[in-house]
Length: 291
Image (cartoon, rainbow, N blue to C red):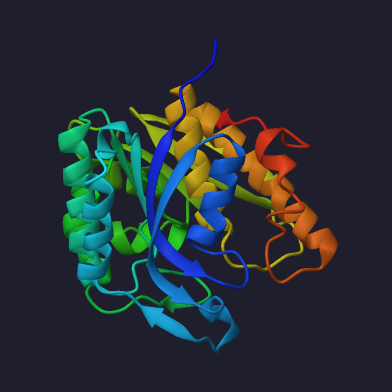
């Protein structure tokens, strides 16, 4: 049986050099067989972790114009999901919600995956003022899936996620903030609690009152963009397989393989092309456990 093509509208940042935002999310989705309609919120020469970059931040009006242009092709009825990430400017938020509303009007079964990009533990908040409030007050109430890191989960819920019990409480609080009649599925990335061995890193999926933990060996690598890739992969596998735990295993195993090859190459940018087989058939499969 041939599976239908999955169509994903991805609204994120773009870099010409390296892999973050859409430059990290689009190729893995395409490698798995999805069609990706990408709309960029910024176009930079490289990610901002280098300390210097060139390029432009797009306006909400520019993003909305592209959404409406796709809609004019009568394509949105075939859109299975909207994926949003780094916004660059608070005005883009309204354009993203316009996309979600327009897609759902054309296809009520479509889902919205919100990667609530705010910052990280080593950087603090790195988005413009107003974006964090928009995510908490307007985006998450429309989201079916959310993929925060630990820092973002803490910012959005006000809960210090030092222990696994606190992480579960925060995940449930975040789920309560999401669309009432949606999936209310949360993927927590880059997790460390009192139960995490120092040489490992955890991820947690929460849906329907259940929690699943995926633990993988920590790798000697510090790169940008892995979170964008895992959000896209988790969305794809959750829609394709209908299971949060299976999506956690598939996405986590693929990204571990991606980062392992990146570490072996000694690269500052993730080895997206060289490690592309990891998206289709991960070299090592990690099983999730009930948390």
